[in-house]
Amino acid sequence: MKNNNSTPPECTDYHVHCHYDGCSAKDMTLAAVYESAVTAGLREICVVKHYSHELPNGGDVWVNWKRTKPDDFEAYLEEFANTPQPAGLRVLSGVETELTTDKGDVNIPDAQAARVDLLLISNHWLPDAPGLSRAWQPLLGEGKLPHAMPLEQLGPWLEALAASGPEPYARAVFEGNANAVRRHPKARVLAHLGDGGLHALRAFRIPADDISDDRLLELAAPLFEACVTHNALWELTPEFPRRTNIVREANRCGVSFTATVDAHFLNNPRWGYTLAQHDVAEEALRKLGLRRGKL
Image (cartoon, rainbow, N blue to C red):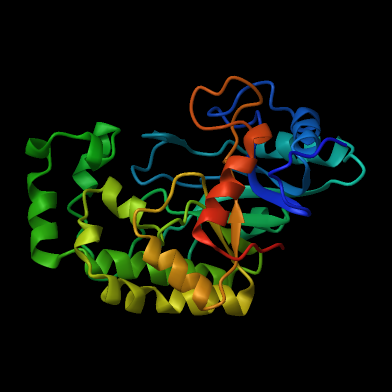
């Protein structure tokens, strides 16, 4: 078995997409993904299907996301059950789904979540929480996130943010992820977490970086505790988090991290990386001096 020199022993990647997602290459069959994982020197992976039970606009498509078709999910489960796993590679089934409320609700019904091994929780949009402005809701018809829209279209939303400041939204993200980990036994990877999910706030033009380092760590403390208590891993991609202090403090508190390239392509990626390039994610984790975890 070939093993990249920069890939550590017992290397894992819990965020690998497959051809059932429209954002992935059609040649990402499970058999092909397994072969690529072995070549990359991986020992354990999770092959995921996007699962969005509902979208913020109530439709079937919004921005980059599509409402999950039951037949696609069934086909994914059938292929997973019928594709032999190579010797030396452990493969988990899973979904990448969204955090929807600060109470820890996620965007997949319990009955469907029970059918996979792992839930990856992503902050794709703002969770619902008491007291948060919903002035961004009229923007949903644009099919874009606010960071991609001209300022003149965002007047009421920007006024709401100026009145509230960013802190309530950061608190909702941290508490929502913490509660998802506490409530859902299979929610053991927090995807795209990086600097605690602040990227989701920036996508909505919420000035998360106005929050001081000390206050940010206070707000994130419940998330640190939940991850340590329930052995939930923070996912790190090759892109360094803008606020590295939050991952370093999480590490100091005992949180473990998992590296991924969030692979959507086998070859010639239109963006991002292929699974064969997993070592670039491991290198980012090493440079930050973070603890590697395993499920």
